[in-house]
Image 1 (spheres, rainbow, N blue to C red):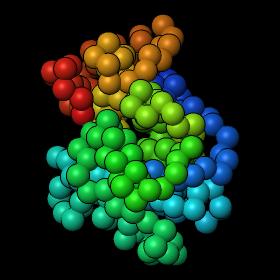
Image 2 (cartoon, one colour):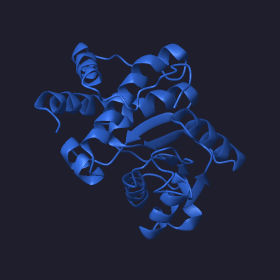
Image 3 (cartoon, one colour):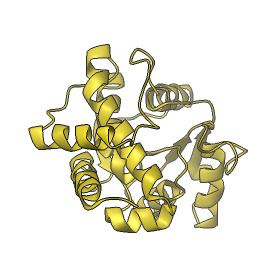
Length: 221
């Protein structure tokens, strides 16, 4: 059972992570691999809306996805997008990345290898990782004009789709921790974190939502 305080704190982190960028046409859409096929759905929708002529899906597997996505996150995303009508020639797959930094670096390398000119990119992530992904992308590939995107939904709707409130809140706490510690490690650009967000994070951490925390802050994931 999630307490009222924990739920309110999770809502605070959820709202902070979302950037509210206006969607506009970009050179490419990059869908960041994860357990959430909604990322593939949103990326496909953006393609169909004319927001990008090309998609890169990036991601290997993780402890969360190795059973449900045995062929790799990017490959399962590609299959999903094709089911949704995205033509195969509009999708590139990057199957090696195991963290957000690698998602960006390896996607960049793939696009450069294919000689695709990139000036702007839609960065499609889970709703609770928009800010973290954006801060990472700006650090690693600063020449690109980044636009963050995710499936528009509330925390309640997202929990219902994942069927695990604890997993979602654990992930929120992990994303928030990385947003606060990784700039010092050089993994992402600094983001101002309001005091009420820090307090919400600390309460959730104290309440035991810790399974996705980084133990070694020098190792990005």
